[in-house]
Image 1 (cartoon, one colour):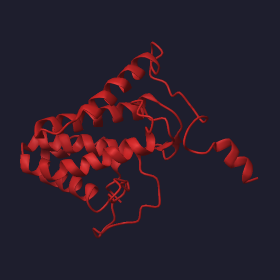
Image 2 (cartoon, rainbow, N blue to C red):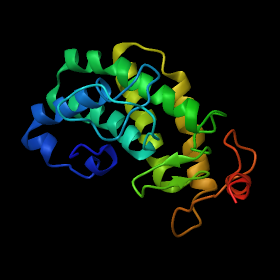
Image 3 (cartoon, helix red, strand yellow):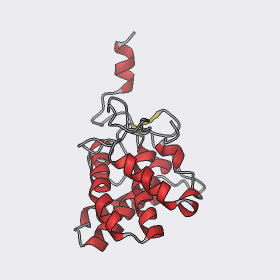
Image 4 (cartoon, helix red, strand yellow):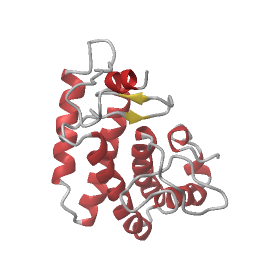
Length: 195
């Protein structure tokens, strides 16, 4: 499983050395590994085939994939490739908003899986920065294509404000843990029921 989306975020040389290989990974992630709702598994199956979607999507991996579509387009200059990938990336982002930012605050409030193989509850600097990057990437691609990206720009502006004013303590970015007032059931209540 060498395709783990959130780990693959760290590989920055490959798109410059082997750009067609990197574009093929984007195609795999947004076709075989993404369902009709926009949920992506964070590990693609080999041989390539559609896979089940019974496990969490990885927020940083899914957002990173959107940014990587933008990066691959910028490196290749292949407008036709980007036009093919844009609707898939947009569907992916819409899924993320629906699942993790349903109140459209520009931050991830609902529990979200990530590279640490745990769920973060509430807004945090790490995953919110990926979210803002994905919003910027989809906005830039959509604007280039003449799509209305006002929703994504507004989310990005709201999220950036929260990052700067609420998630930065003057020295570093924090995690504002929240378990109440979410769509997800309380983890405390769920754990008490299992005893």
